[in-house]
Image 1 (cartoon, rainbow over the protein chains, first blue to last red):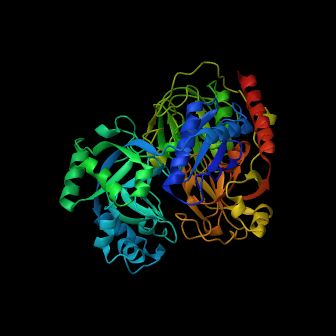
Image 2 (cartoon, chains in turn green, blue; image 1 turned 90 degrees about the vertical axis):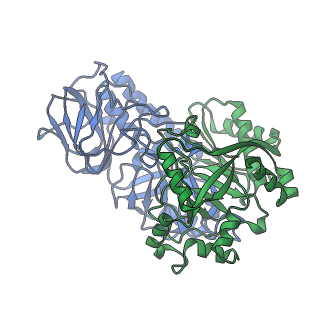
Length: 291
Length: 323
């Protein structure tokens, strides 16, 4: 993959779309990140937005200020010169989660007719098709290894996350057969191999496993960790989920309302090669940063 | 202030939108019909990109608390001031206490109301546009509700009642709409049959015709080439590893109903996009009524750039005329 050239295609006259790989891997993500950072450094006139996704990226541009072919040439140049960084200075963030909560449960029951398996819950279904003994085993797997934020989008501030485990242990679930028209705010979702946190209430097609009390998008920027920007997550962030009980959840919600809630955030260095060499042991060393 | 007596179906404050936050999932927003908003602004002496009201299908009822100069462009929706119909595409004076109402549109779906001075809500991330899904911008991040009070900025004094768009600069709306599309992105994933039928079938507007996107129905199902799905892409052949969505891009979940994403787009997701509507034709989408028919015409990137030049030329005619 690392040496396969990127596939470029114009999204009409205002977007350049680039597919690094048609399948998901951290290598593809790192390559996309390297190229987009190289393009950012070029500071090209007429480039409006550089959007990094899981295994692809997109550049929104103003063709009155930069000709599409000139942009493509510049991006190809950046691709040729970008050395896919194999390490990343980033942060690890502990996100508390009330798994199997009453609100996503009420919602998933309401939309049962749109689900593959109307007779079980999203957690029971996900545990079964991933070969895990029960819901507890699924939650242990979900919160057992950290996740890499590989894209921010869909709606404002929603992180897509890719778990740091070997491919055989990746949790995979299909999306709902037909999307729901409602998803509670701050729901933990999962579709394909990606986890997500729904930053706002709204439509959604991912399976629902729980809720976090931690706001991750707030135009009012009420909490300390949202002061810098109304959107908390950035691609490259590392997330560790921490199962909490109802009492801790209620306390956290009260703290959010009082403006006192904060997240545990620590700086870490992530090394792709160290992870690939030891996909079980290396993530544990990252988790230790939170201890 | 302008008092909202009835909000209408989906009336929101919009300007030309915000750029630079799509990588965080925050779309450009702004008037779906950018030409109509700019035309209305010119008529009342505003900068072309001032914030106005986008009024979809059922317009609002508004009480002006002070004298104002107003113009409405875009959809052909009768505009009544204290019951007297006003000329379309023409600036008119409103006196304090008068009430403005809209009739049903005979053509088009969104009317744009500009008031001299512009709607003066605070800028958020560089724009006054409403992004309702993210509760951002506009008036409290949402569409209007009854009882809202809209602040109005200071008029430039350049506008005058009776200023009118020349016929050549008015929009023709209604009938079958041809939307020009640059095929690409994941177009190669379609079967040969689907790659043809998409451009030959007629596509009436379906159940969703909103700022996020427009859904079309009635054409033949579009099949994707079977393949072993790549890791992480999801099981349906219309699925891809979640990627970014261009504004104007067309996706076809499960191969059934094409969706064109518009200025409040979801910024990414896992459905293959088969092409993108050219920038010069984006205005036409938001003016389509439910069941109005579209056809898609494949064009090259060069065609798209040429169409954009003609579109910009029309805008500079407007600017010259009222500048």
